[in-house]
Image (cartoon, rainbow, N blue to C red; front, side):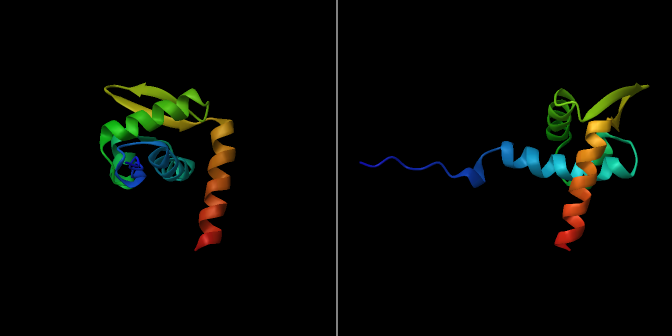
Length: 95
């Protein structure tokens, strides 16, 4: 009996989500620094997914987090700004 192939469309929060959510978040952070909750509302994902993506972007050196009371404020690093600008150009070219 042949093995069934995994359906990647039904996998929860994998690399495809990281790329999609990360690109949209970087594009929005290029406009102005923001909070995780606001970005999750813009992207249309759960807060916890956005927090996981932001952790990965922080590990990659694309964003830095600053605490503002109980909220975490996200700011692009120089490396993140360069990538966000590239994402912005690609999104503009695809329109």
